[in-house]
Every structure is written in structure tokens, then in C-alpha cells.
Length: 111
Length: 117
Image 1 (cartoon, rainbow over the protein chains, first blue to last red):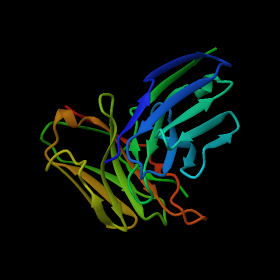
Image 2 (image 1 turned 30 degrees about the vertical axis):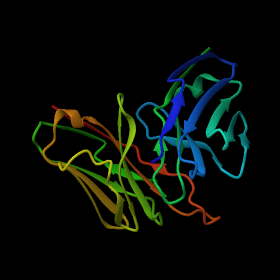
Image 3 (image 1 turned 180 degrees about the vertical axis):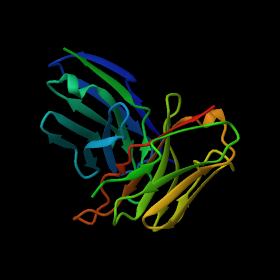
């Protein structure tokens, strides 16, 4: 089955800097790669996703890149703000199957 | 839509007691997932349903755990008997086809924080 590895487990940046979180997956059949943000005491919430027919997707300050050959995808947050501080999860699946999540990255943005 | 609804939000119980967690998915969604989150193991899939039928329960830790989905708007996760190592946050999520007929994001509920003493 699918296995998703996520790095780093913790990331500390200064406000205004960029943050990059990387994930690798094992199942070449996976074709959907979402990123979730989880704030304290809440459930994970989708922030951006990408499908295997697209290499890059951007939404304001966040972007995701996908390299299907290498089986890795990354989350990029530019101009970080204190409210970006949270736990971020990557995940992978095929349509109609359960998402397999990475272990999460705790991002801390200090002002 | 109110989103995915879970109850209770917090549950404290003693070892050996039965615990029942409840979930109401988003109306129209045909997939429902139960996850468990702990510091050590992260977000683990326990079981998921499609059209009320269990599809994969390989993540259910042991026979003490059981899940049902009697109809499209309700699911339960039961632990009997509960043990301290079951302490975790349990999330329910649902998923359905979007306007493009593709399955898009899973929507998570707020979770149930379970503490077994």
C-alpha cells in the first residue's frame, strides 16, 4: 500500500521568510496530493491540492509542486506570517481510496 | 452546510468502559472515514465506508474497535472495552464528488478527544 514520508518534522522561520515542506510517496498509482493545515484543537483543513496531470499549482502565497517521476511533492509558503504557524500534513491517494497522510510538519513563524 | 459533525467533543472514561463516538457526514457525501491522531503515530486511518458499506478496516487496531454506518447520515465508532492506550483524538471525515464529478477534498470534523483513565 501507499506510504508517505514528510520532512522536516519541525520548521522554524522568521516572518517574511519562505517555508518549504517536502513529501515522498511510494505508490505510483496515486494521483491526488492534498495539503492540510491543522490548527490547535481543530480538524485538518485543506489548503491546496494537486492532481497528477499538473506539475505546479499556486494560490496566493502557497504553491505545490509535483514530480511524478521522482514521486515527490512539496509545499511552498512565501512571505510567511505568524498565522501560518500550524501543523501541515501532506497526503496521497487514488480517487475512491483513503488518504494516506505524512507524519506532519510543525511550522513556527516568529515575528 | 454545517460540515462534518462529531460528538462528543471530549470524552473522559475509565478503563474497561464502552465508548461510542458519533459522526454525521456532509449531506450528499458517499465516503466516510475514521482517523485516529496521536503524537507518536500521527493521523492513522482506522476504517472507511463507501455508500454505507465498509471498504477497508485494516487500520482498526483490534477487535475492541468496531464501526458502523447504518445510513448515509450517521456513523459510530465503538471501543469496548476501552484501554488507556486508546487515548487520542478521533476524527471523522467525509468526501463526495464535486461539480467536476471528481472526488475532491476530504472534509474533517472537529474531532473527539478521548481520554481513558
